Image (cartoon, rainbow, N blue to C red; front, side, top):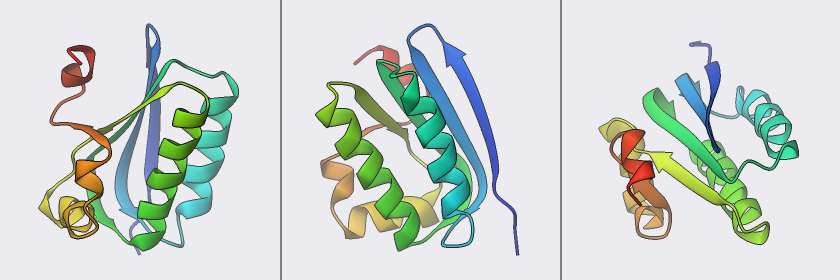
Length: 112
């Protein structure tokens, strides 16, 4: 079992949460707790960086969709930095790549 490592960085009005490893039912609680902690401060932009994510299942997808819904309700931005092909496939299959704000690199979010 690969562990999931989380790294949180603040850059101005953006909080970036980088995920490394596997986001699945075993690690979902860890991600949800960190999102709750970050969202308490209501940053204008929350960035989920999936570039170092090796695997994500439907549980991980649900977490991303729920975080996006909360951001929209609170007039904040959720930006997703695209992950590797195995991760992006689940976004394409569900067509969420068309609904979510997705960028290739963290710097790409600033241009939007």
